[in-house]
Image (cartoon, rainbow, N blue to C red):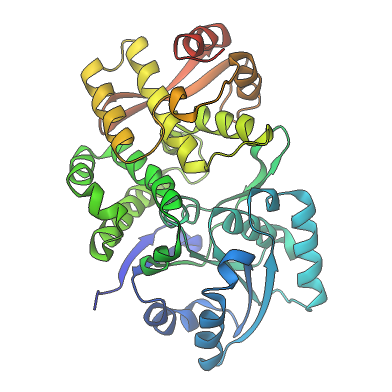
Length: 371
């Protein structure tokens, strides 16, 4: 039986722990009572997750003397909206939620972002706990306190920084996911290694196949190392005024591609868009003489070997450069009339690069197959 890994994110009065294991019952029994202000929680999940894990979580909590109420929302990115936010808050109020109660976000990134945002604004802020059920949410969206919803103009344009009281991660839950979801989530693990830990990157290359086949011990280590890296960055820069922006490696390209493709009625998963976005960031780094072609090729090959898209041909669709530039104009990192990207000097060494013009980016996109 694996020990429960604990990672503390030290944010003074907002400090909390990430618990990682492959047995959700052990983690909950050992930790939940110490976290709650009072023994009453509202479990919020989606239709997909409700069918396989919600009854078990409710049983564990209720046998421990904790009162539970459940709210199930539709699955998918469309639930990260003002409409869903309003409905969730009204549902909570109809259940007579009080300030001392806690929300539990049980699901992937959509649930975590929506529930976290709702908890930050209802009664001007109440406690919430993350129980992430996807790789992507276990290593990225559940950690660090970013919450939010999407607008038609782009992802996560409305939100807040609101830290959870705890993150409770059971890697065995990943076995319910389709292979495509597993590969997509793995993009965020690769991102962590590329932005700040070359040894981790090399370890991932060796163990990539077994991680994607969900070897529990290896997944626990990969999640733990990713979370430790993110925790260190968040402790230094909680509200993304500096170094935390490095965590956006691949995301400026990725969010724009995701926004465009999904708005057109076709489908791409967030992690797939981020994998492709990292490849584009590596290409742009070479073009700007910041990174060698050899390093870029190693990154692109590793991403491609994992099953993630590494170029536009892998997506088998046409995307217009002009449409991507328009989406860039709403990016949160944009300064004046120029763009900010996270670029690569070497594996494990990334930098924040300001002042990249729209004209430069349009030319770059043309050279990489965009119309």
